Amino acid sequence: MSVDIEDTLQASLPRLAGLGAVVCFDLGGEGQWLVDARGRQPRLSRDEDGDGDPACTIKISVDNLGKLMAGKMDPMLGYTLGKIKVKGSMGVAMKLVAAIG
Image (cartoon, rainbow, N blue to C red):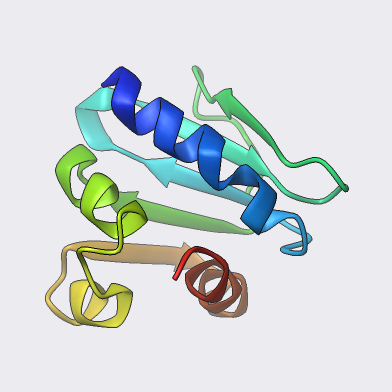
């Protein structure tokens, strides 16, 4: 995974403090990252085995994740065009969009 994307995810953690859930970013061949935002201090970790227990999984390419986090991709348009796929809680996904948008 690109260090820039990891840095971007790390930088977004404070905005996710009120999310109250675990979210998985599934980046295909680049692996999966879990954001545990259930506590005051959200944490980022690799989900090496794919056995995390997220409330929501966001399937997205590394390039599109970078665009999303940089505000260069509208999350709703990305979802509509199939560039972002959501599995699990749509409520958590909507909170995530509000937090990073």
